[in-house]
Structures are given as C-alpha cells and as structure tokens.
Amino acid sequence: MIVIITGASHTGKTVLAQRMLEKYKYPYVSIDHLKMGLIRSGNTNLTPEDDDELVGYLWPIVREMIKTAIENRQNLIVEGCYIPFNWRKGFDNDYLSEIRFICLAMTDAYIDARFDDIRDHGSDIENRLDDSDCTADWLKEDNGKIIEGFSKAGEQIILIDTDYESHISGLFEENEKMLRTERLILRRWEDRDAEDLYKYASDPDVGPIAGWPPHDSLEKSKYIITTFQSRAECFAICLKENSRAIGCIELMLNGHTDMTDRDDECELGYWLGKPFWGRGIMPEATKEMLRHAFEDLGMQKVWCGYYEGNNKSKRVQEKCGFKHQWRSEDLDVPLMHEKRTGHVSLMTKEDWEDIK
Image (cartoon, rainbow, N blue to C red):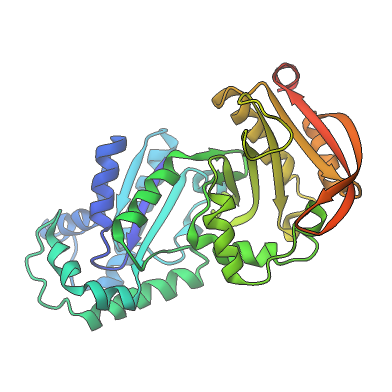
C-alpha cells in the first residue's frame, strides 16, 4: 500500500504521516526533505520559493519512487505539497490500485475560528524557521487553490471544518476497513461521499426497484451516510482509478435484518449507480463480500433477496451461486408504502467453498 498525503499548508499533513508511520510501521518519505536535500547539495538552482518549478522538478522523481515501491511490494507513505493536481496521469490502473490518496484542506470558517491554534501547532513535528508569512488571509488563499485544483481534477478532499482529530481518526478507521478486487475498492462511507451518493441515489431507476425512494436532497444523502451507511459492514463501492463512491454493498448483521436471528448468519444488500450497470461490477463486489463474510467474519450463511421484476439483482445472485429458497407474496415495502412479491436466496459456507 502506498499512501500519498498532500494538501494545503498547516493542515497537519506531517502530523498524519507521522501517526501512520507509528501505527502501521510504513516507511515515510517527506517530499520537503527531498527538496531541501537537492537544493542544499547543489543539484538544482531552484530555491524553496520556486513552488511551481519545484512541482515539475520533484514529482517525476517521487512518481518513479512510488512505482518502484509498488513493483517491489513495499509499503510507503509519501507526504508533501509538491504533487500535481493531475498526478494520476502518471500511473496505469495496476499502480493506482495500490495507492491511497489523501488531500487535506481547511474551510475559511475553520481558519477564522482556529487561526491561533493552527499557527501554534505549525511546528508540532517539524521546526518551521520562519512562519511570519502565515496569516489567515494567506491560509485561505492557499487552501482555496488546493480545493479548486484537486476538485477540478476529480479528487476528493478531506475538508477540515470542525475538529481536526475527528477527521484524522476517521482516516485511520477507513484504512483498516477496506476490501479490494481487481477493479474495485470497498471502503467505509465518509461525509465527503455525500455528493456522489446523491448523484446516483437520486435516480428514480435505482432505489425504488430495491425498495427505497430516491434521495430528494443532498441533506438526505448526508443523513443516510451518518445513520444507515455507518453500520459495521456497510461499504461504498468505488472504482480503483479514483476511489469515488458509485454504489453500496452491505452485510446486514443480526439485529439489522429480518432474514435471520443468528449471529453467524447475515443478509447481503446492494445497489449500483445506473451509469455502471452492465459492466459486471456488482458480481465482482458481491464475490468479495461473500469471501469477507465467510473468511473474515466467520459466517455460516448469507441470505439475499430481491423483489419481483428486479431482474438485475436476480442475475447477480445467480452469477454468484446463490440458491433460490422461496417466493413470498404481499410483502410490505414500508419505505415505498406498498406490497410486492419477494424472492429469497441463500449461500451457505459449504456452497461457497465448492465454487470459490
């Protein structure tokens, strides 16, 4: 795993890198250290003030270091601000699948409310020799450039708007709760996924066929993330190339499903954004969730259901080896205020071991 940590000045990039180093024991490369080594050794005429030129000078070196680490199956933390907005163009998907990108930035409101603390903590890890240029207005300008540049490039940004520690602790939790397939990353939902969730979950062709109404506002999507999609085994389905949420898959444990009352059984539920239908994404995600259920969680049975007419969901279950169990009529669909015919399928651990 390669972890790239970048962002605006004074956002705690070095603090985060140091904590990851201590927790995961990954080697850590500071791009700022590389910069100063090249400058002080006389290997470049650039100076620390030549930010734009330094990006073009340093990034090709760092990029190839990352590729080498991936090829050697080595973990590495890379931290610094000299990373171009279009950094992904230097890697193919095989490399990108091994990289986790973290970009930190602060809102104007956070800077206004916490400016003294931000400046006071500027030397927590590294000794800043001169921080006199750090003003609230300068920080806002710097953070604004980072937010605009990486957003236009399609990157997600960890936007620090309340408590720094809560944002950082969430990153550690996400890092420890991540599943991978050939094309996908399955990870925990985050507040920053709200716009992507709303984009796909507001489509009337997505939710109703699965038994829930389309999201009618961004606020609704934010609420869903902090409630239902914060459950223990609920994952955002993301393409490896950018880690943006395109769907959802969950193992609903005892207490959150009406299909079983046993702790060694669960129910599988899923949905996928319409632009990604027909590409085999959901069977790929489902097979990894089955592996996770049986190997990691010790499940003995995984149940799954679909409503009459949802042929896409039916085909996913058939492709993955689920066996149809029964058909029920006049089932209540409470979120849609109607009744439907439902079907229930089952995958046992024994069946899974025969086909895996």
